[in-house]
Length: 250
Image 1 (cartoon, one colour):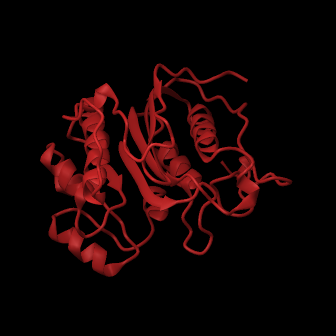
Image 2 (cartoon, rainbow, N blue to C red):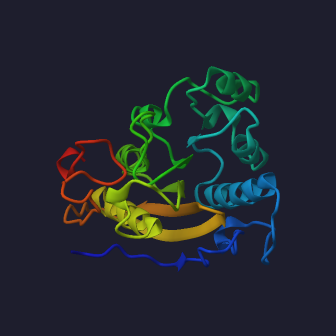
């Protein structure tokens, strides 16, 4: 199996209760380790990392899809860095959250982000659902499915993908390896499958039980379908995808 070329990776101690370090590409003002006790401070630090990387890598004239609440922390950070609110898509299943987001000027259709990303092309995305790597069958939240649809549509363009996922789960069929290990393997395999090289990779635990990952993807010119995905034990179902979803469904 041909391995995806990765230029840089940073993995702070996963036991830490803070975001220990940030990628230099993110152009944040946080150049040293700091303690953050308030949730809002932690959230803003991660947002600065995501938005700084997106703007420096792709510029401001791009279409972005994110999961956000009516407070619009991510949307406001994007707008402060020059992204047009009309190019920011923040779908939400809660009508009240959508209404609050629309007041900011962003596009906020009612529905799941999985469905939204499957029908449009975006250059940057942050799947901040705080779900587990195994997903949520009741709500239809699946990290792998979102990443797959995002890459499928953005195949010919340089793009940035970010994901927040829980580091603990009670879904026993996807606990045979650390959750970070499974997430990284799934994203790397999906990238190669869709013909992307990983130009930049960053992961860090930014608060107890939550992992933030970010990847800069660049078209490599060739799709490599010889990939080894993590699957639910005893089945061919890919971890991070709905029941019955196998490699044949990619």
